[in-house]
Image (cartoon, rainbow, N blue to C red):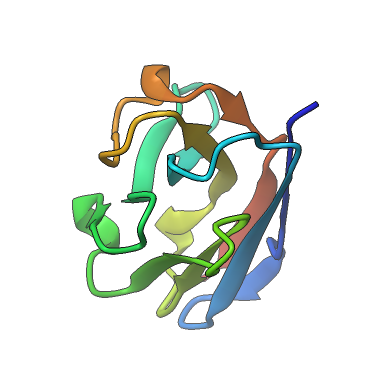
Length: 124
């Protein structure tokens, strides 16, 4: 059984940094892209940062570029999101997900497995 568990979200002040972690278990393939998505109240999930299976290709949504870095460990079983210079508008639930696609995918529909999310709240 595949399981993804996010951690690291919490309440912080604007300007602070957070490191989100997604631990995976039960994955039967390592050739897979992974991503971080966020969900604001009343909206659909949207991509934040994605990385390919080899940790060589990444992409970010425009408003986090330069502030966030996505990476995965060498075993390709964990995913990280380093978030710096946080803003109140970053407040959302952040989810990690795994896609069987080799190339990183920004479309949530391309992802097969999801975690339950971690809340990031940034106060002004």
